[in-house]
Image (cartoon, rainbow, N blue to C red; front, side, top):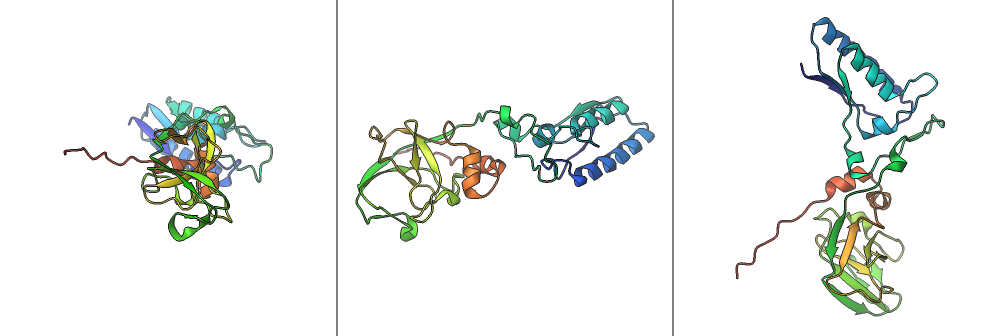
Length: 242
């Protein structure tokens, strides 16, 4: 038997009763393993949030301390699976019922994933011109817009769309924010480069990276950074056989 593992359902919730219950159930399972004269090399429990949410409470030694203890009782080594933290992110710790709890590593993580595309067209529009599907955005004055070859088919969430009544997401062009204008479509997105005088066709546009993070996308889209990162995908290039 190489290892025994479990996975916490509420690892990002401070002092979660469900986590404590799962620990007890896991300890029972480990007792059965030991009673069967099996000797696992590893005991694995938890993910990035388990590491982040390991501050000890009044009646709780903390998940990592607990994990080391139960692993040691079997002569095994403790193991956690760092998933989201490998990208430089961690879910916020829910401290609603445990205000003394805090994150151990989240504030020290730095995002390492960068997602870029390039400006493929520029266009000047005038007041009253509409942009995107269903004309949800109308220019209030002269604007300069850039077209990007990325959309929701690539993982750029449709919830990042903007309308005149609602701000959406943004990308970074030449180190400056360029707000998404109108609906994000399947494989095209329009951004506002009115205030970026040097913007040119061929410029890099950062969809995720310096100045715009998966947490930013998640906040606008009403989801978590994990879903944003897992949703990014590339379309195969079509070779030119002409």
